Length: 107
Image 1 (cartoon, rainbow, N blue to C red):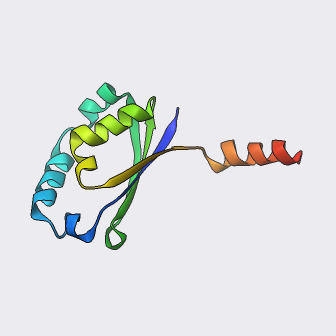
Image 2: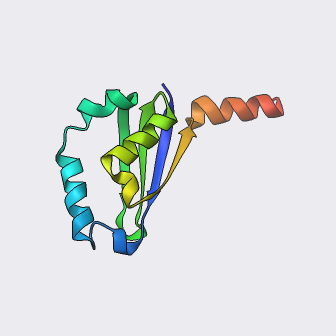
C-alpha cells in the first residue's frame, strides 16, 4: 500500500460554486463510475476526499502504485483543468514518523 495526497486549489473564479461550466463537469465526474477506471491508473482505492469550499482547496488520499498515473488520472478526468495540483507521498504517523525519529535520535 502506497498512500499519496492529491492536494488541489483553484481560484474563486474557477470554483464550481461560481462557474457553471466547471460545476457541470464536476457533477458529471461525481456521477460517473470512477471505481471502474481506477485500475487503469493503478489506483487501488480512494481513501478519502476532503474539501474546504471557502479556501478553494481539497485533499484526496489515494492508495496507488504510481504517482505519474495519478497525475494522468487527474488530467484525463478534468480535475487538473481547473486546479493547481500537488501529488505527495504520505506515511502514517505511527508507522512512519515515530519509527523514523526513534531511529534518527536513538530513542
